[in-house]
Image (cartoon, rainbow, N blue to C red; front, side):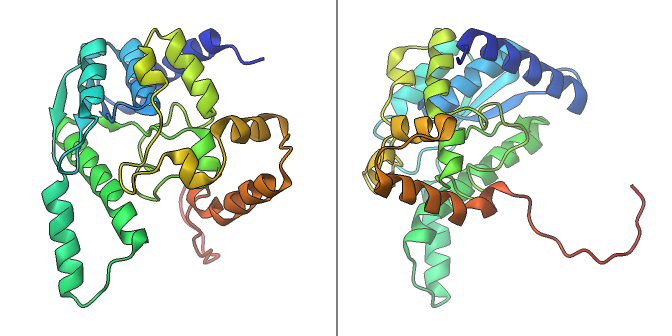
Length: 249
């Protein structure tokens, strides 16, 4: 049985230990804040582990973001400092440069480039502040590859990547986050569909299959298994050629 309270305590201790081991005193956690459950819970856990003054929320709308008030609300609820950096112009400039080179944009480029641009921004902010970038992915999304390689799948530490979406919500409630943040319907912000519409199944179904191995719908089970196999390259370390030559450890 999943214990949200104990798990939250363990994560808080884990984050504190990570920062103690990897940086000088006062090192900040850099969290890309969207106003969804994953970034909200990650920011709350970091604030509990490090203190609110050591968590920097980075808002990165792409032009106009209709629900950016959710991200403002999270930063206000946690009372953490924030910066807002709009990626609309640089993404459009990059798209223009790609097209000027004679290449035609497709869905892979249009959907993934903003996520990679956001990670570039987070590491720029981390470089300026000497901070560490939080990865905000959860196990459910990672399981079926619903994350962008070198985009939101990147980071320096990952508090939630071994927890399902259901478990992340439970921790959010345990931390006292507002329901509007914890239960916000996940949406990619690009094609206008919810995550579950894009996936073709609900997170409840996926999470049960991950934890219990149970999925009554064979078609959905096959789809989940196929997506998991096809996206393992996002979870595994990058393959590297073994030269067989000795080197110092």
